[in-house]
Length: 430
Image 1 (tube, rainbow, N blue to C red):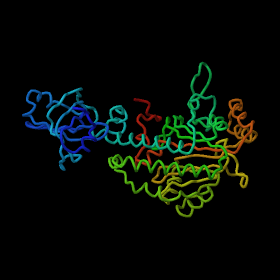
Image 2 (cartoon, rainbow, N blue to C red):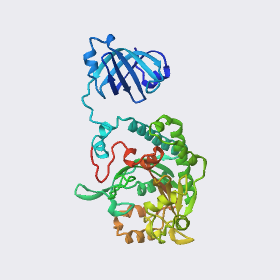
Image 3 (cartoon, rainbow, N blue to C red):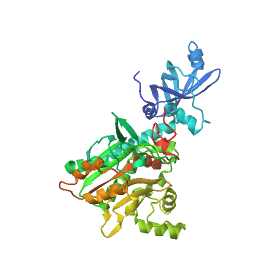
């Protein structure tokens, strides 16, 4: 018989089927062996009667979790079964044995991390990885439908776009180089040719952080667009998030159920416009509604972002942060030079910043002044100054922490579960 997936067998509902996969759970008696079989699509209960398999029974009875098998039999509906269907097995072919699979329910986070290469087989991680695939696919779909070109930039770079101390240094044939924190400085060069570009690629931040929403290596969804102003950038960001949520709700209902995610927590973000608050309005709200005083000029901390988001059930834009607290490329607001033309998009349910974006400063003297103030070497940015020396135009872009979006959509406790093999201060392997 031709092998089909477990989900295809369930969809068929009755008759002869041939499936294959790995043993997810097993139990038995003197007369029966019950195998819960899994593949990438679903799980199903398979029942083997000893009287049919007397020659094989010694081997069947010893089968353990994660052994791989091929099965032929008759599928029928059975409400007592784990996914409402059961296969009465006629033939079994044992492919690969497994002995004492080292994943048990009582393992702590560290031990599960040590066994991550095996923990990926769990229903939880399978569900997350499927949703992750939908998220990245939807991001590509959104930008391409908007007429953006995909553009890649170097991972090994001479200088940074964010704070110097958070950069990973490496020896590049005897010269000091760094792992990219963002594609932005190179994207601005490409913007002058392609106008609308995006990329989904790894970025690296050497932050000494052990929080539930930080990774040292993460997938960065970034865009850069010609002629755009701050409001247009926020429009793009809102549309993008709504598009991704819509696709996940369309394609991953079963996976969200496996994760126990209440989809009603996501629905307001599809139906409502995301509020847009200035930094000044945010400080006022925190003071009046949450009794938290933030000195003007300070960036918002995690606790302040979380307290603000307790007031909302959708993401919220906070824009026009203090210029001195921002990266060098964020331009001053002409109407209020103490602030920058930038924004952060904060997520509800204590998920913090999803996106950071801004218009870009094309005033070379202002750029040099900001870089000097941050202790950067101007020679490392000579190419960047040249970018804006020939026909500079208004433009801007943003960066999304892709795992942060996945964490929020899935309702995860930690961002480490939003990526297959997380890298943090304390996790370097497997």
